Length: 194
Image (cartoon, rainbow, N blue to C red):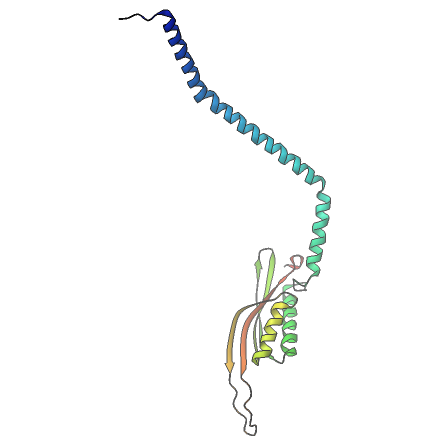
């Protein structure tokens, strides 16, 4: 066996020691340092969020006032059916229907209240309606229902043609009449629910 000179032996020992230190640093210290850096970043982000929330809570009174103004504007708008109870709301929708159908020359044949349903934070009030009339007036009635105030929605639309017989002394055949069955519904404002 050849003996390694002491200088080379020391260099090899130092190289092994340096390699061992690098391994410990790569697998022990660097991941720990990364975790510390990530935790510090998260803490800094949390501090920033707390500072923002602290600023926004100092303005809370003005936000509450803005919300009150917006709620008042919504409640004064034509979005909702104006009534204190669900039966009164159904009656208001029925009156609106009578007015629209009468204005356009149709006839309201039957009106049936549908059960009120909770939807989101509102109460849905609806009617099942059968009305008759000529095509053009019925189109105007449906248009007025969906575009007028309060906001009403038309659903389950069924249309049938009703042919009338010719009268004896009259020479002209009357125009075809439509029978329209439809569900019409709207919503009570949140404070009037119940």
